Length: 267
Image (cartoon, rainbow, N blue to C red; front, side, top):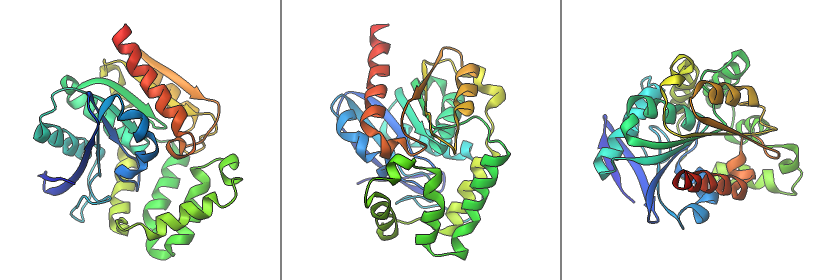
């Protein structure tokens, strides 16, 4: 699978399927594989592009601070490299923050925007949680780290599935491309510093804002703020699932994405 040198890093990306291009950007501590459960549905109709943000997965990163805007710049450079002039754009959590900055900096590249479980600006509780996640790993083992993080990601219903959380933790521990503690710290600081609240009105492409009703990390109020601030944005609140809706409710999320994109052609 290919890499490209952009902005001083080796950036990993993956392209599958045919049709109009659809770019998927993952969130904190995650790489392109976080979208895997949606891929069978999406690649049937779209050319799906995924990437590893700097310091995650198979993408390198220098050990110094970077911003959400920097990661958006990385993404724009990737699009230029592979020759994609305009696409549909979806981002989950931190990926949604990156997607907002990309849409603001390069409106000519973004045909439509899908913001999943994300925000314009964090509140005190959110920032405290993310700051803790960014500094915790060097002090504890990865298994305990996962046990502390996952309750913010998944619902009680997901926890109630026998063996599910144990399987998630085992997969995380054994994953061959784990981020370094330094990479997690820099990413957490970028998330906390990000703020598009006063610029949302400058996003003019058709936008779908999606959040699950039981999301306690990026609660509904964050998505309401996005949908109110972005002209022509549509808010969709899913009845089930939490912040990890790409894992917990992949069929529902894929279906809603495809329906939104299909409606663009109808309208």
